[in-house]
Image (cartoon, rainbow, N blue to C red; front, side, top):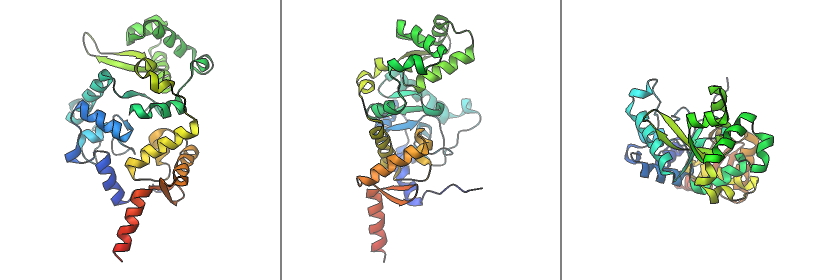
Length: 281
């Protein structure tokens, strides 16, 4: 069994500060969460320390080793993260949806064009790329622009609940549909809307795919300090070859330093490490 490469301790400290994995930096309010997401660029919602990358749940816990308990309903930290998620959706200042590989993620507005360049879908491609069920759901939603889950399912004519859920996930992954609000009375439901209605300028901006991959790599490395083999791909949903091309583009412009195959360090932190090493000699 091949062991996963370990992140150096000084890089973990760097991530603690940038990813709010310290008690003094823990996230408590929706405003603080929005500032965190804007600064980091993109953040997973409910992942814990067993998954790489920044996480709202871990930032709410304010500790590096946070692990989601089995009984999340009775856990204060996971419940508070869920409440913040609902508030962030309603406020509409950051993008939220299930994106690549079904991972629920928040995206800062400045990063939306880059994500859309990689995973988004143009309207001219919908009939060819979307399933028939997803097309039916999208057609129903475009008539009203915002609908609750049960009404949307009924208007789309989708009787099978699993097929409807799969279609919604498909539309979210293509950055076409997003949840706009969560209601608990008279019953629990999501309201759904078109993503372009919330972020029209960001989603209509055209970006070259290579540029988008490079900017995702830059965004991650800026707050991670260093990326180890396969890490960028796991965090973003990119393929490993494409993630590698993004990191090498950063090396070419001097933003990153390649330490070994798959190991890329933020140039500023690499220089600081070398300076400290020279000073100790």
